[in-house]
Amino acid sequence: MTENSDVQLRPIRRALISVSDKNGIVDFARELARFDVEIISTGGTAKTLRDAGLKVRDISEITGFPEMMDGRVKTLHPRVHGGLLAIRDNADHVAALEQHGIEPVDLVVVNLYPFAETIKRDGVTREEAIEQIDIGGPAMIRSAAKNSQDVAVVVSPNQYPGVIDELKIHSGALSLNTRRQLAQAAFEQTAQYDAMVSSYLAGSSGPLPDRLTWTMKKVSDLRYGENPHQKAALYQTSGAGIANAEILSGKEMSFNNYVDAEAAWQLVCDFEQTACAIIKHTNPSGAALGDTPAEAYQKALATDTVSAFGGIVAFNRTVDAAAAQEVSKIFTEVVIAPEYEPEALELLRAKKNLRVIRMKSMEQSRKVEVKEIGGGMLVQTADDHKLSRDELKVVTERQPSEEEIRALLFAWTVCKHTKSNAIVYAREGQTVGVGAGQMSRVDSVKIGAMRAQLPVAGSVLASDAFFPFRDGIDQAAQHGITAVIQPGGSVRDDEVIAAANEHGLAMVFTGIRHFKH
Image (cartoon, rainbow, N blue to C red):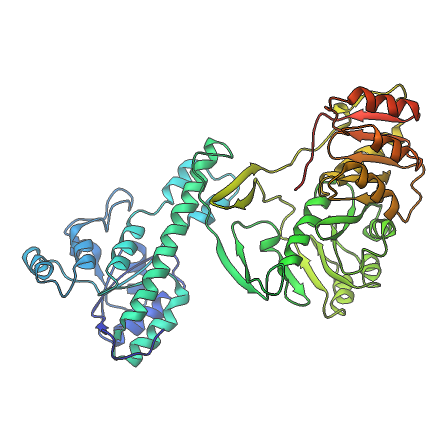
């Protein structure tokens, strides 16, 4: 709050208080009373203040109407909004106040019905949610904020101390600068609230309605963005996901840490079995399944021990001491898991720069994916397709074995989380080599085999999109693969299938593509 004493101070003589969140309101109102501020209040707030021994006027005394319709109508009245919107230096406005017996209000203290908390509850009905849409609160906030020339508006308990401090400095008055700052925060609050309600109601019209409105809360500034010359911050949109994860130890997360952590978490959440993924620059350097988290990590690491240095490690199971011990052996930027055993957490915390993240939920928060472009945004539903073996279509003369099918399904899942053009070599439950982000699919085939630190012979291959030519199959066959999984759909599918038959490979089509740009 500003301490300027020479910029249009306005004394606070009358305050209207109506809050859903009662935290700190009694102490705040007591401080107002010390400046002889008259307090007007509504319903439960008035009772809370009276029970604390404070003198309060009911809103119905001001409006001449009782609160009605289960509290839906109580402050929507000219005697309320006239007192908020009247410009004190406008003679006509002042005359209207006097003519209609309207008392000016100098301070509004309002926070809104708990709509966000309501819609998060399991089993909440639409009717219950609708009743938590505040009408009178936003109207008062907006009226007061519009007239910040004369009126102050407080929308959060976090603002109480600063307001009281300035009232003490200015003997019961607030400066114009402070009133303007409070007005900006107030409109930010109502915009956020309306966007939240809009998003909730839009959910019933499908994932891509005609209008999309997001509200995001700034959590923290980051040291920088992808590069040191870029500014960055973390914003939250919901209660789930990486942005809401709990950081248990280590340095603060960077922009790139968050991006890679999201990729790692999304990958392991696609497996029902115990899984571990090691991510570098959003691509898996290794991923694996295991009977234990430690085994899954060891197998993931074996794929590429070099690239794992400085990587992001994610588990979809509680991390035990054995897994923590393995992770601690090399430099790792971030570890993500739903939970940690006490001994594991102690081991990981011993690495002071290692960021240890606990996810609050296995729930996947991303219903849509957004990419900003000049002048707008591209929005799509999240790629949440999970392939079942029943969807596989064998297109070659040789049928895949049961072991190959399990390996193909594993490779396909990892491939889904690899940047296009994506090629993944794998065995059952373990990646062997990853070729990611190449302009040519055959180059991804070559790079995946070249980077493999495990034997490629006997592995299977997954491709996120169809092979446009047979050269990718010919190249992979040279390394001794036994089976291929790919979407199919190329105009040269017959040539690609013929190549697989010539090399004695089994090939299955999925009919699903997993481009990741």
